[in-house]
Length: 220
Image 1 (tube, rainbow, N blue to C red):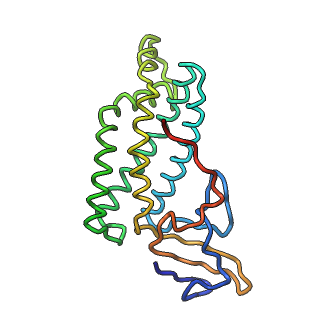
Image 2: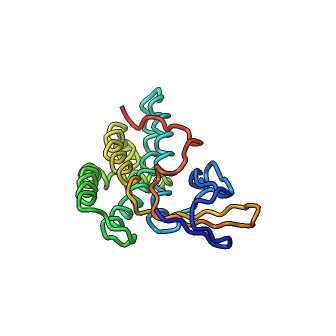
Image 3: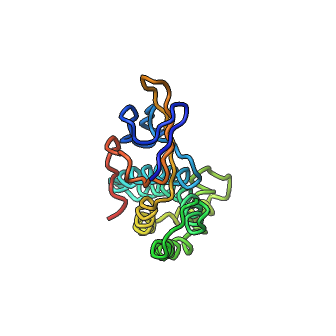
């Protein structure tokens, strides 16, 4: 890990600057001195983390559903978030394997990432056409279409399928978080003025996430 500063240049972890802080969360904790992504990999990981947290909350609601209608209603919104997550996951996996982050993976890391992504892809691909139809026709927005067609799409919403997909997603996400390919920046007002720190690389789990609530279970 390397650390550098700007405006007030620093050559190390000066006592005036706090590094034990989380990522700036536009949907929650917005600390002025929190970290922000400074490369493409970190930007993708941050979005994945935000979406994954929302999916966990939705699973908590799904697990309390009292009827088939409630299950399908919550599951369709999980599908919307899941497909957004899929776009970012695919982009981050490709970026990590390509070495374009500037931090090449070891051969063992690359092999493990390919295996986890393969497990996830094997579950996603067969279900993807139906999931995208659900999102496009009855979830993200509602098309004006034949009511029988709407009923057919509604019947495709399956909470068990959504639960099954959660497991390989979590394994892939947890592995990606621990790669040393992410760079971050933060600024902080100190007695000597504004300090900007650039840290590279730093894993997600090396940051302070104590302020984050524990996410509900994403499956049985």
